[in-house]
Structures are given as C-alpha cells and as structure tokens.
Length: 285
Image 1 (cartoon, one colour):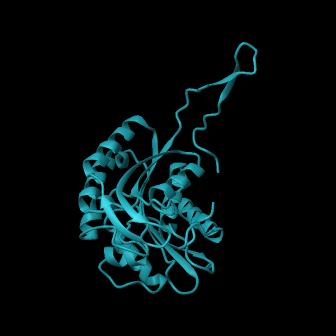
Image 2 (cartoon, one colour; image 1 turned 120 degrees about the horizontal axis):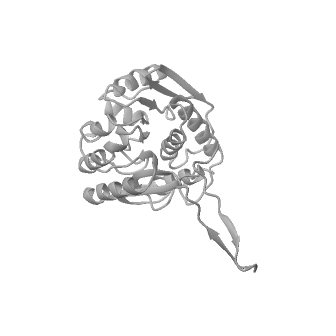
Image 3 (tube, rainbow, N blue to C red; image 1 turned 120 degrees about the vertical axis):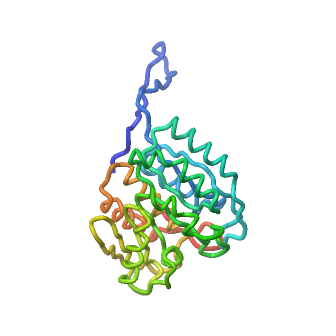
C-alpha cells in the first residue's frame, strides 16, 4: 500500500565535510486523527490506534477522552477527561493539520460524545471519512460509556462513514437481543444504519464456528467470511479494525474495499498475536 504524501529527506553536504543536515521539503504530511481513551498497556485505545496509523505512513494526531486503569488482564477503572479540553484540542488540530481520516473509540459519557460531534462536524461536511467504534464495555471489566448509548452516540452515528459494533454493542444500540446468526446481524445493522451512518460493519467474532462479519451500506449487504483462528482472542481487535478502516479510507480506497481489506489484515494480526503481560495476548504487527 502506498504511503500518503511522502516527505523524503533531502541531504545537503555542508562545506564538503562529513557533517550533513536534513533540508525539509515543502510537502505537508497527511494526518489521521484519533479520538479515544488511553489504555496504559498499549494493547487497545489510543496507543494501539496510533500504532496502526503509523504503520500506514500517516502522521498520528490524537486526543484522550478518558484515562483508564487496565492491563492485559482487565479494565478496573475509568475517568473521563474534560470535554471542553478535548473539543479545543480537536479544533486546533483541524486548523493546523491536513486531516485525511478520523477514528473515534471510547467516549466515556454523553457530554464527551456531544463535544466530539460538534468538533468534527466540519470534517464530516468536507467528506473526511469518520470511523466510529462504539465502545460500550471492556471485554473484561467495567462499562466504558455511561448512560444511554443511543442518546450519547446518536449525533456521531449521523456523522459516521462506518460504524463498527460487535454483537453486544449492536444489541444495545438497536434495543434487541444478541444476534446468533448472520441474518439477525444483517437485520440489526440495517436498523442501525437508519441512524445516519453511511455503512455499518457488524462484527461476528463472538459467533460460534466460522467468523462472519456483515457489512451493510448503500449498495446492499455483504458477508465477509474468515477462518476462525484457534487460541485466546487478542486484546484490542476492535480498536485495530476500526483504525485500519480509517486509514484505508484516508488513502481514498472505496468503502467496501477498505472494510474487506481491514478485516483481512486484522485476521493476519490475530494469527501473529504475542504474549506481553499475564493476560490476553496483543495483536501482532
């Protein structure tokens, strides 16, 4: 995959000696904006998102919506940051950087979600792709979004290019039972799409048997199938997937191509997962 707006260094020999200096070119490097919580272990959240964005060659810009106390085993505490600080940071980054894509993860509460929605509205109006991972609860640990999820995330759903809920998140956002098959996933994704996002990717990693993710967009529905990889599910797969999609859209890839490519890439990273702490493994490179 090609890198965005590359900035190769130009070397100048100074006074014909061995001492060299880098002369910066005029090209501005494109950025992807991450809006998410901080997982100090680096397995998920902003640190993990930044790793994915860096791998794609974009500059990483980001703001922290919440601090957490967690490791590879579980998340036991969450403290939201100040919404006005987050919105001010986003405004300054938008004014300064060439933002090509946005990934939104953990938001902690409705006040934060509303502040983020107001801050990124002009990016959405300029057709900058926005990927929303509706993080509601730690896989092992505490809730990560306070209050009513639909009320909190409603304004962001209407701005999103792609929303990436897992089965639990889909059931909560559609006030329905937990899907147990791809047909139910498809129906729930269609209902969630009525809130305004361009596409919904319902993640089926928690289904039994073959993994099936269901993408619902303006062109219809498509099932993205993959072989289940044996072993413990790594930490941060949802974060990595949404960041992968954001980066591919930021390159200008068509939506379906971006989503399918991201799903395949994350499955490879799951196969290459490695132990870091005493809990779940972290995704491979």
